[in-house]
Image 1: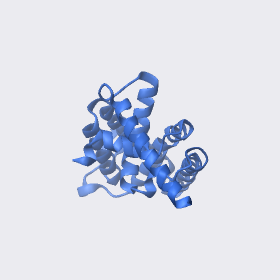
Image 2: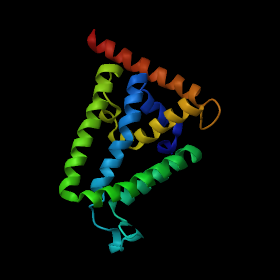
Image 3: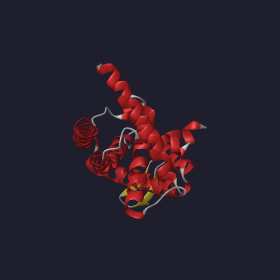
Length: 196
């Protein structure tokens, strides 16, 4: 299935994120967007009326919509690439657990304000990255679901490649770069035609 084709997913997202400054901005802001969204989802009711899982005296896990979203992201990433996907799944799990702790510490009346401020700040940074550095609209304007699903994994793969030279398989980045360059060229040609 195309949705589990890592090359296509990475190339789609990569075509909107080729500028190094924009990529860095996304590396800083994408995971906090997911984390803060999970804070709000912690206030959703438990699925199937299951009781919370007690971690310790002051902490418990609620199997709610935040858990469901975390599980969906984690499974999607593992299906895309077992190694990096497992790391991404672990990061998603850490985000879910820690966002629940933060949510319970803040309480809903303060949490939604903190989340709103963080989301506005992070999204503003990303839109600046696209407008000033990438000079291209974000991927979410063309495919909202794909952009939201792929963003955390894309920045993780970028970080793993930059820091450790990680590739899901040998030649992955050079193969995907050819596709990304072709998609960027096609976009630039369409943009030029509109201007002419």
